[in-house]
Image (cartoon, helix red, strand yellow):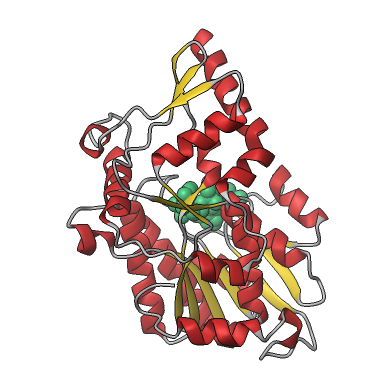
Length: 335
Ligand SMILES: NC(=O)c1ccc[n+]([C@@H]2O[C@H](COP(=O)([O-])OP(=O)(O)OC[C@H]3O[C@@H](n4cnc5c(N)ncnc54)[C@H](OP(=O)(O)O)[C@@H]3O)[C@@H](O)[C@H]2O)c1
């Protein structure tokens, strides 16, 4: 939970006395929840958590590709798949018609266009307002530019959308997520230094990494939607583990016998000069982590989902994915 949510201890006191079944809202009928990004990692985690409880939730999953394998998998779990595009207001109104709640995540990395992400977020919120959706849960962010004085487009965009949500007057809950463990087999997978030796190239310097499994976010959203009134107007900073890069390296080395992992002591100023597009935004994100104004709350997150995993536990269960990501890179190098 963050600075603008002083009622944190009250929430813990109340939630500890309530199971999901004793919600302040009645569940005489299942609530319809529209999940954006459901074919992706974050929305998928939310969709699956809600689909586990068909007595409480009917799940509508939004995608631009209704016939994709990921959409079909969600349909097999019981989701209603709806074709909609965040650029197309009419499609959003159709997707949100008669819905009770919406989980919204917007997207920067596909087009790396801050303004476009903001417009897409506002489109979804306008559609929610016109459809009378009673609760928005949004994957937001702090105002990084204001906090550290430099542009961080993929997070600043989400703060602008948060501001709009606060203006429109619908019930909302903002989630501020930490670094996902899953990044270690995607964007931040280890890179090879020499045979059998790999670097974890995060320019954390002496900062700490707040992190969690994206797969554990879904249960948190489930809990919020079970007791929505408790979380109206709240901004919740989620986190399962807080690690230095030395801790991350130790956990990698503990789980892989035949590979050695190292901290290459990468500096933020080196990272921002990398040639890939988005390097400056990611460098700013690490500066924000280092700066320490990014507030995430392990205790609250455990209340929302008592099964959140530590990084060590997650690695134990997911090292095959990490190993596969490293292997694919090596094959590409050799090709
Ligand atoms: N905290 C972290 O460590 C971390 C890491 C990665 C990402 N993120 C953030 O988390 C969010 C979700 O990321 P993710 O990794 O879950 O994404 P992802 O796996 O890449 O999936 C993207 C999702 O967005 C949907 N989408 C994209 N553009 C759309 C549009 N115009 N209209 C409707 N749907 C659209 C896609 O749907 P279809 O393709 O099926 O239409 C897909 O479901 C992003 O904001 C990202 O910046 C955070």
